[in-house]
Amino acid sequence: MSQPAISKAPDRIAGMFDAIAKHYDLLNHVLSAGIDRRWRWRAIEALSLSGVERVLDLCTGTADLALAARTATPGAARVVGVDFADAMLRVGRGKLLHARLDDAVSLVRGDATRIPVADRAVDAVTIAFGIRNVERPAAACEEIHRVLRPGGRLAILEFAVPTAPVLRAAYLAYFRYVLPRVGKLVSRHDTAYEYLPASVDTFASPGEFVELLQASRFVDIRAVPLTFGIVYLYTARRG
Image 1 (cartoon, rainbow, N blue to C red):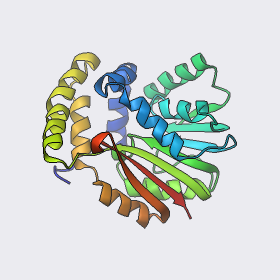
Image 2 (tube, rainbow, N blue to C red):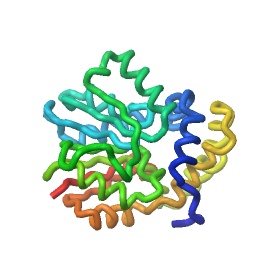
Image 3 (cartoon, rainbow, N blue to C red):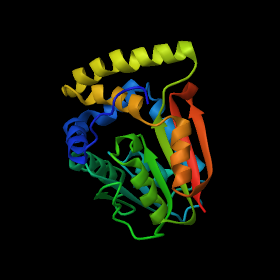
Image 4 (tube, rainbow, N blue to C red):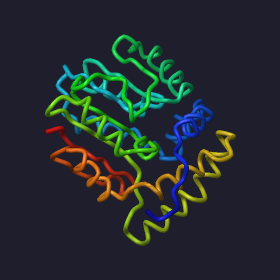
């Protein structure tokens, strides 16, 4: 943890994402040079879906990962996306209607620390770049464990800070100076894209997050660096 804690009160974070919802997808693709799509497909691939699974996409945002879970070959039979930001969910519902997938993918407003899903009700859980925005990530991991069936799989994508000195310096310069300026220019939001690098700085390191998953009773945990370690794919299984 390299920076002081920042506020992740649910109302504050939901309001911030609601404010940038209509620009969110464009900025994701532009600021990652389109690599974000590849990261999401890696997460779905890690689930080894067979076509019959029920998948929960937590912190679903505009539903990109939920859509990827359904449209993979083979894809999930049913997907439920949960998020607490109404405007983000409205964008996601528009995408589902456009893709004619609203019968197979449902989006529900809810909190990651109080998931509106029954015990042992899903075969897999995914999160893309959302766990660091949860005020109590340990509580979210306990909830994920609760809703997964025994043997169910978990795949989480999250940003990290590279450890190689030259790459780390270049990454931090981009993340702290270039990204906030571009984000503000496009979204017209003063603080949302300043929050992004701050939230990465203050989130658990890969080793710390693995320990959190272990404490939440997950097994077969792996932390796989993607794109030189700027993103990690965490996979695990409920024992």
